[in-house]
Length: 328
Ligand code: TYM
Image 1 (spheres, rainbow, N blue to C red):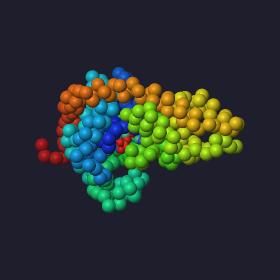
Image 2 (cartoon, rainbow, N blue to C red):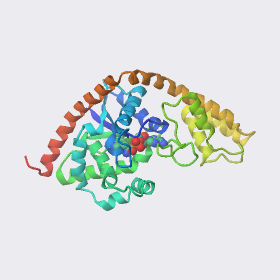
Image 3 (cartoon, rainbow, N blue to C red):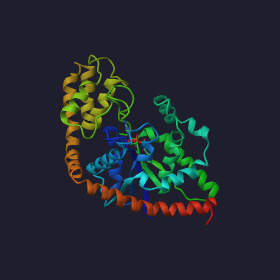
Image 4 (cartoon, rainbow, N blue to C red):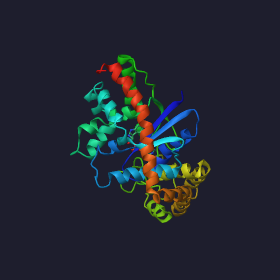
């Protein structure tokens, strides 16, 4: 039997460069590896664990699917669908939530961060977020999960619950490992932290045009352009990391030498970086148009993906029901 891969992105709108380099590039690499069966979803049930707009949710879900397809995910090779169309995810999540403590969930850094962001919206679903994510992965017995480094604490929960289920009930969930890409941590344009959809001014979307990219980069913080030591943190460090990711290590080294020598001219660096980024995004944007113009094709891909996913999900649930002792 082929090993399985599962991953997904919350349905919070368009994908950004962090999602692309940290996750989608990994999805693509594994989709083309014949040793794996790949399943990629838009996590709309995870999206509703923080405040959201009900008028936009379905559209956001479709938009992420279109971004996936535009990047090259192929329904002939991968199962592509929306999480909420496969109810077995929440079904398994409920069972798994009976096997992990509230205290374990409360201590997760990701939970604490969200509590800070939305102090008036600390819901049961938010607390259970990692359990639903464990269910997403275990439902398909996935052994590889292409995600950015920020998701490692969640993966650890999935491993813990899987191990516990195997020991207590004799299930055979494999240990899910992170599939690492070169862009496992894409920094923010603000000079602080990672690129994130929830931080205004921090990200470049896959659908941004050349002018928008230039404008967003022009706002990224810099310094005088020279010094005795190349900064390891902050705006300049982040820009250099983006240079490395989009232009390669050689160009990064070129700028580092300039920093230690005559100085970097950030206007030029940013203009060059914008060009490299747009060069990578342009074909994706062209391909996206094909799907934007054919919404029924996108809907069909989502529907058919859900049907295929439910076959696998149904098998796992039958097994889990039996093993945990539910009525036959
Ligand atoms: P989400 O929606 O926040 O992000 C989707 C993917 O993009 C990666 N990512 C980044 N990678 C590198 N640098 C960044 N700045 C950056 N920002 C985001 C994330 O690591 C992720 O891989 N909990 C998940 C969604 C999820 C999931 C799952 C993933 C739900 N169930 C099961 C895998 C398997 C999340 O919030 O991703």
